[in-house]
Image 1 (cartoon, rainbow, N blue to C red):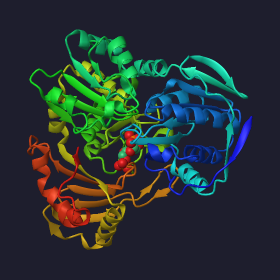
Image 2 (cartoon, protein in one colour; image 1 turned 180 degrees about the vertical axis):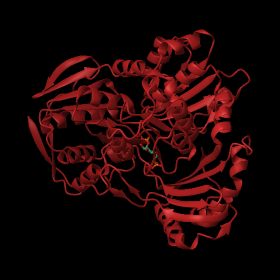
Image 3 (spheres, helix red, strand yellow; image 1 turned 180 degrees about the horizontal axis):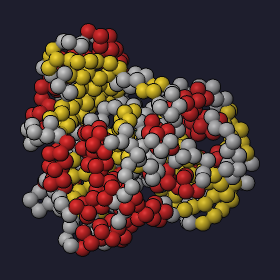
Image 4 (cartoon, rainbow, N blue to C red; image 1 turned 90 degrees about the vertical axis):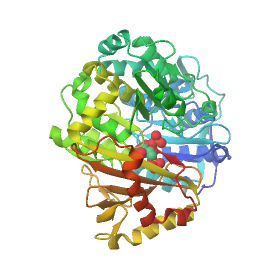
Length: 542
Ligand code: G16
């Protein structure tokens, strides 16, 4: 029986950079998840009888919200729902499943790299039929609906068994419980030379992958250990846990410190990598050699032609604005376009659909390609492995050769987390107010060439996105960027992105912190970070 449940709007359901992310306790309020899911359905047209993909990263509340979403999908007229067995689907695997099954869209349950558990974070994101995050016009419509909703529809039914593969009925809707790993692993095998990687590993190449007790464990075991023959201790923290073992599943140098320490040890493996809560981010560390996400994008783009899936070359490269310009130099050399978009994977979707770019990347540890419409952690690791197998060189050697060819973009991101929102807004407002006075002025970073608030005009549909981050560009090509994160769940997070380019005949071997020190001082001088936030230094540096 379909129930229509009266409800009242919540005023805090505006999707952020990547869907709605809130504390679990917020999602546990009566009607909260239901309101948002109904608002998603109400913002879509023409899904009656169509297929929905449903899954998440296994975090606390995943299984409960899957049951709610199934009953609401049935009540709202979807024809079929594909659910990852156990409620598990990594974000890139969900994107692939939406595309390969011709689904109308998908609901992805994840708060990505944010921690999980009863006192931590949860999230719901809607992806459209190309497999990618809903574009802004859809998320805006969802938000508008959340503010006006008066009721939602849900089937009055028993919970569904989501652990046994197979097909069942819920009202008029069919439910298929599918293997979350196999189809995705096959896709990876179609893109990369698994034989060459297997041979590299058979020759003694060693790797270590930290799944951070999050969703990539089963994918990594199947691909690295079972299909590529890496040793059985390759994948660490391989079992997805609802609280990620009380760790923060964010693959950066702070939260994946155990991997970092292993990679810096005298007996380090040749290659180390990690992925995040929902499997779309990646961290790459060679033996004694950390690779920044921005550099990783550049190296992958420069070498992708060595792998079967990209042997015909790239159509273009896209990066988010705060990501370093390292990839720009590769695009220039390859003679292909480089697109600079706002932060948020959703902005790459149109470019990928239009065939304008092949590879995309972000400083926030995301890299991906036109094989799906999400960033893809395991894909990035495999592309690296395939390149290493083709070149038969170590990561450090590849990085050194890359910088000698293109020069080096020294880069760091400083995060100031959990700032009071009004203080963070005041800082950004003060910064915006002084933008016109900055060009020509000098500070510790040198002379300012230009300063603006980044706006993006999508070349495919001409939509404009404004206020996407304050950029201060210096005459020597260095840059400091300020923006507020759109993914946090507590107060505001200020991100300061710092970049300095050194040409190939300059000093390529500095420690990044030393190379960037004057720009870090400049950021403080221009934005008065400690004055506004009371923080003397960032909580996280990546
Ligand atoms: C999401 C988005 C990314 C974005 C990142 C950080 O990633 O998909 O495009 O770069 O958040 O965004 P912000 O700087 O606004 O916090 P994920 O992995 O959290 O889904």
